[in-house]
Image 1 (tube, rainbow, N blue to C red):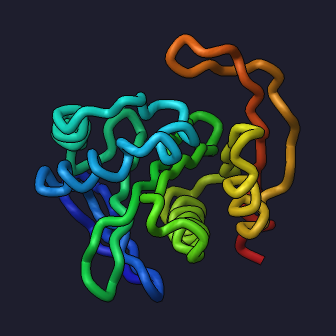
Image 2: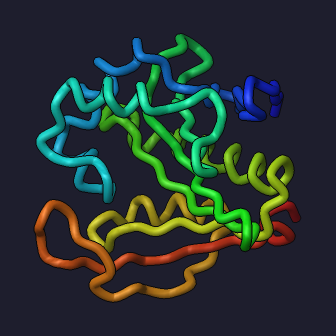
Length: 188
């Protein structure tokens, strides 16, 4: 994985066999809006509202600094072959505890092709080797078992279910299924 140091200490891009994880650009906003406007994409996330308006994507991208803001790193998932933006992955770091949580979404057209696992593996490696994290975790809704399978492929272990832990847009509370992996487990 190749790494470059950018302004403010934000390390990127990250490279995998098929992907480049880079910072977002304002030019990405129309494609972001198109992908996350689909209910199937938005409902798998906690923070993407539905309906999603084009100006929301512009505001979201404009809020991304070149360096991590509040220990949150947002990566655009793009394909090496054509540079096309296909999704997003974020790492939210709790420095005091040397741990982080990852979250991700992918455009519907790109589901079930291994892209999310490939991107998440790169971010986990970066978090453990470059940020010195001890643990990384992720969660998914019970209605999104495919996200749980990604976590399992990454070597994450099931850590429990947080009952009626979150709610989206005034809907009923839902469970969150938690997974985690320790640095020594991942780097083995």
